[in-house]
Amino acid sequence: MKTSNKAAKGKQSLDQVSELTTNRLSLYLRCLNVLEGAGEQTVSSRSLAEKFHLNAAQIRKDLAYFGEFGVRGVGYYVGDLKRHLRQILGLDRKLRVAIIGAGNLGLALADYPGFRQEGFEIAVLFDTLREKVGQTSRGGVPIHDVADLTTLTRCDGIQIAVIAVPEAAAQHVLNLVVAAGIRAILNFSPGTLDVPPGVKLKSVDLTVSLESLSFFLAQGEG
Amino acid sequence: MKTSNKAAKGKQSLDQVSELTTNRLSLYLRCLNVLEGAGEQTVSSRSLAEKFHLNAAQIRKDLAYFGEFGVRGVGYYVGDLKRHLRQILGLDRKLRVAIIGAGNLGLALADYPGFRQEGFEIAVLFDTLREKVGQTSRGGVPIHDVADLTTLTRCDGIQIAVIAVPEAAAQHVLNLVVAAGIRAILNFSPGTLDVPPGVKLKSVDLTVSLESLSFFLAQGEG
DNA sequence: AAATGTGAATGCTTTCACAGCA
DNA sequence: TGCTGTGAAAGCATTCACATTT
Image (cartoon, rainbow over all chains, first blue to last red):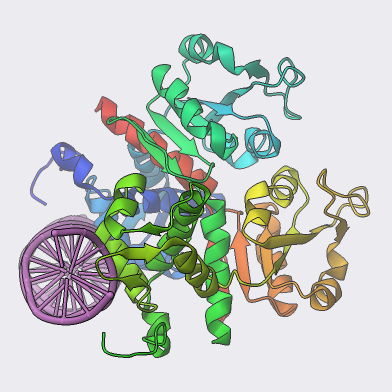
């Protein structure tokens, strides 16, 4: 690279970076947290790769999309790279999250410690059931009526919605959430959902995950 | 294709089929369930693609790895293809599942209706906490002591394990599960896990999923 | 000497486009 | 005619290998 301004490179072409790459940035960040906890000052792509079953060239290429964060002959400064990754991933601010569906899964997600750890704040749960509205999750996340979703997410500054409702309600809930101005959605319900352009939907499909294990077992028997 | 024996093709080379393909088989199966519910007898790759936002050529190619299931000029018979997919995915038998970790997430997964739907049977939960052992989930899945994992999974014929324990315990639990003879594991804990060869580990990383949404939002702002 | 950043090469996946069959 | 099954082409992603820098 020839530019003197670190991290300036490629900012025009950031939407060309694939999701595979950005997902790995999250993993790298997690690894760096471990290394920092162990008191490591610097790390090379090679040692990072060896410790966490990754590929060194891939680490370097992934990072290089976003800037020159390393020092030749040395490696990467752990704290420095962590900071850069958190900034790239948008984790250098608190992100407020709403979960729609206060069933078993929604409640579990609301109290999932992994989310809070990296700076997400699960601010509110929504449900339609009378007996749930007004309650809180074990961890203290309040449950509101879905009817109040639009107004509440607006004034609460919610930026991410998690859909944890039964399949039949998912598209309706998604429409509500989008209408409320939310543009990033994590979906746990199965089935096909329509999203308008400009809105990012990421789906976690538990059934597909289990069935891929079933396929593996079925093959082993032949 | 020239072979007259349907579905016989490629059985030697089935491990060459990528996981991207097999994951899509699960999606196709789900779509077929919808179509069958709507009373459709046949479906073409084109109409399947249009209805569920898929690619027609990809559907055909995915299916063709496993046999000739379609009829030229007609399409696929819904019930017939469903049966084939269930067989390919190993869903033509009950699969017994154990969940390790009876915390919020483990309990939610134990009662998740989507699993039972396609023939999985969540047979047992495991935990280390005295006060949990002996209880059941809301849906009635019994909670046993992790100490009994090996004997219980053996005589219960458990084939799939779900890891829903805190990060610090995950590798230990994975080792136990593998030692008990289980070769297919769905993992919800973050971090790197070592698996011996011949064992399939599929990880669902909730933090990575949320962070990819954070990245999307951060880009939109520039 | 050591490790980055990166073109070039390889390997995978998706899409195209059409021969061939019902 | 309509649609599958499938080579060939195009498009992505990963890995290699090395010039370059500290």
